[in-house]
Length: 242
Image 1 (cartoon, helix red, strand yellow):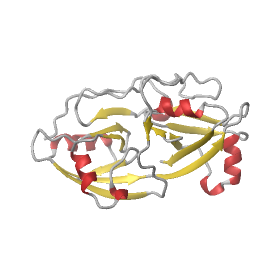
Image 2 (tube, one colour):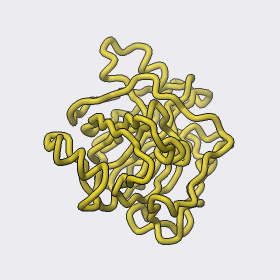
Image 3 (tube, one colour):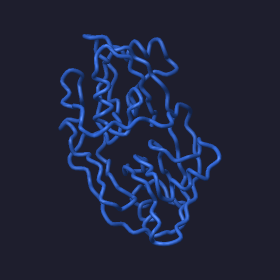
Image 4 (spheres, rainbow, N blue to C red):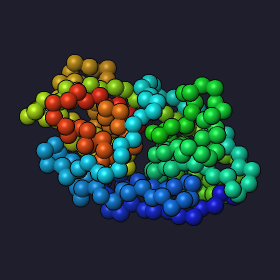
């Protein structure tokens, strides 16, 4: 069986991510810091307390922009020494991959897959394990008990957004911070995002989307925000529809 050593829970957080629960499926002493969200969960431009943090930003190695699709991953653990090599955030109905570690069963799977599109990567969603779905907690129990795992993965639609930051002109969005992304709570009627939406109706940003990358920086919400708050720069965002 998978050895489950530690679990860290999210404290009081914004209403749009109350079910975020960081779990290190590698069972090593690494915990994801989720407890520094604003009390009301929203970060308004010009008033946000989000600042650059000391940790180095994560640069996206394989940017994905494309449509929603599913794929299957087969993992088999031969002995107790083998680790999954995966960190996820627990949502109510699924798990979101936060990090694929350099070593482990998932990394081995990725190395053996011919098509890069079927490699597990950060941002992928685990929606079913061994026929069990619709409950992240039930799927976690399967992970803990079974040595053979068949995982149904979904990669949500991702699309690129380019915004030229201009001093004094707001982006015009309200955000809620998650582990590695920002949930878009609402889009204002005026602002850079509203202008983008008018000019690009096929890739319009809407509430419920998530900003997962800014100028190649991903994986750490604070770092993404640090890039987004820089004036007079071209923002190349990747937005996930999930």
